[in-house]
Each structure stands twice: as structure tokens, then as C-alpha cells.
Image 1 (cartoon, rainbow, N blue to C red):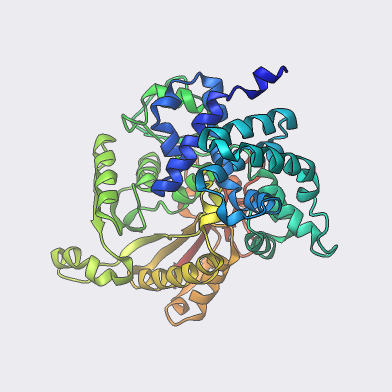
Image 2: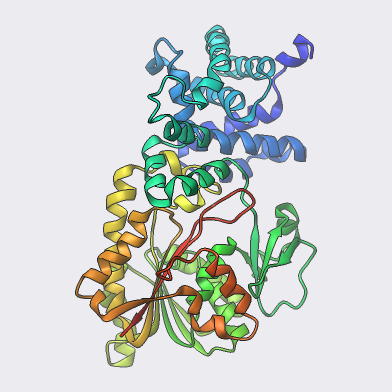
Length: 468
């Protein structure tokens, strides 16, 4: 490649830089920023995909990139945010994409020049040293031998070291390595189809053993089809669909943490397929999310679902109107706690998580909140009813440890763990294949914990507690 071609700044890199700068300025998700950029829409499909790869990859590995860059910056604290972001893009290409050093360094210099002409020489010197050091950094050369495997695993995945340690404690070395190997890969796409839809557009995807689910869907074709806008389908990770299905039972249901209603939609869809009569209360902290949930349910023609906004740490207060209408404290056949969590099972889809999340939040604050929600929810379960607890985390502190703490307390003494794969719906015609998918990830205790892997779906946890 000639010097002129190498030095001409590629539009995809320029767009990625603009998206990253705006994401950091606004505290917004970089994927949403890039999707909304007119400049990005003007790129051809290949360049748009490359810009997205750079923006998501840099976001996911920010701390690791800074660690390496700071080793070669004389005064790291003096580097402007825009110049640092440009350096990160080039370093990401060198360390994680394997871009030829000549190209990555030259383009990195041009990126930096576009933000600060005077910093071009600095960029050239620093990026050449990063290119030479990349392999040794990933291999954790210079780290004590007993720590080297862990440090190398965390660096190769672009994760904070504390999170790598937590993953090993939670999943074992093999499970953590599996997740780390998949961390910078694209996650597969799945949808759950509205049962009113008889035929779906050509969006790719195949049946996978779970009624209504299509796995391996083609993203651009899905968006272009319009079926999401028409509420004919929702996007959801396949393992999340299994969790929602396990929580689907006849009778009354209280869903805590409904968000925008993806699981509300899926539970209603699976109930229709199973022939279950249900009345569903979908609760979320935020009124805006309740509104979005309600609007989609109406568009999907899904009925007998009420949305309620409020803090689930005070269920009696939140459900006061429902209790008032019934002239009694209402109990439910199913209470489904879709708990706020670290999201560590979904980091491939949400690259902001690793470097925005703190150890204190993931290992202490969130588990305390989750236990409080579970204890509150337990008081609304009917005799012989079920309490379903779910997260999209792979950390033991948020999953098994929360269940153990709950069962050890006075509220938990009325409950026992039962296998997720033995939920009533998995005995219905057409759903037995889904039980087999659950059992692939089910522990001896009957707890469901999936782990991300290359070409596999996300990490989700589910516990099924039956009131005794």
C-alpha cells in the first residue's frame, strides 16, 4: 500500500471516533449514538459495519487500551479526551483486530491529527511502541507466573482484572475462559414471534426447540422486515426466552422488573400457545418503561395485562390500588422477579458494562438489592405458588448466593428449590424440547445458569422456588 493510500483517513474510522466522542460526552450507549448519526448512514454496508466494530470494540476494552497506552505516554493525564479516543481506536486495531501495523499506526496518526495537529508526532511514537508491545501485553509477559493465566485471560477479553477474578470464582477457570474467548465476538440474534403471526418475513433464523423462537436471525433483514415495529416479534436472547417461558404458568402473575416488556410479551405469547388463562401485572420502577410496555402489548393484541410503576422494595405501597379493588391483599400464583443486575452475561451486546461496572456494585450493592426484592416478592406468592428469580448475570454473588441467603432467612423457610426444567409448561405438548435446552445448563440443584461462548447465546440465571 502506498504512503498516500495509507495516510488518507478512512471514513469508517472517522465516524467511529465521532461516535465514541459523543457517547462519552453524553453518557449514551455508543451503538445508539452510531445508529443515529447521519454520517454513519451515508457509509456503505461494509464501512458501516467496520465503524460499528471499532466503536463497540473500543468501548468494551477501554481500560485495557488505556493501560497499554499509558505505559508509553510520558504524561497520560495531559492527553485530551479526543486525542485519547483516537489513540484507543488505533490501539484496538493493533491489539485486538490484528490490523497491519503500517495501516493501524498511519490511520491512528491521521485520527489524532484530525483532533489536534500538534499531537501527530506523539501519536506516531506511542502507536509504534504499542504495535511492538501488543503480543507481550496479551500474553501478560512480566507478570508473576502464578498470576499470568488470569491476567492474560482478562487482557485478551479486554476486561478489568477484578471482573476476570470474579468470573473465575463464579464459573471456574474453564467457564471464565469460555466467556472471555467469546467476549469480543458478535452474539447471535434470536426473536420470539407473536402467536397471531402465521408466516414470518424472510428474516433468516431457524426453529430451535422452543415454540415461537427463531435462532440465528439476520439482523439487517429483521430490521427491514418491519415485524418489530408491528409487534409481530420481539428481539430476545434465546436463553432469556427460556427463562421467560419457565415463568409462564396459568392463573395470576406478578412480574417485577418488567422494563419495556420483552419478557411480558414472551410470557403472553407462550401462555397463548400453551392454552393458559392468565391475568398479569407487569411492574417496573419507571413510568416511561411501563408506557412503552403497554403500547407494544396493545399493538400486539395481548390482553389481560396491567402495567404498574413503582419501587418493588415497597410492594404493599405499589400494589395498594390492586389490593383496594380486590378488598384484600392480593397473592399471585406466580411472582417473577427479573432482578436488576450487573448484566455480565450480556457484555457482548452491551460493551459499556465491563468498564462502567464497579466491583462494589456487582459484588455487594446489587446482591443486597436483589435479596431485598426477593424477600419482598415472596410475601405475594400464593400457597403452592412459585417464585421465579432471574438475572442476566454470570456472577455467583448475584445468583446462587442470593438464593442461598434468601432460603436461609425467615421468608425463604417457606420455599424450596425445584428444577427449572420441570416447570409446568415444559410438560405441555410442543415444549418438551425446550426442557432439554434448559437441562444443558442446569445444575444438580435445578438452577439454570448459561454462559456465553462463541456462536452460543448469552449468560442468564434462573431459580424456581415453590412455596411449601
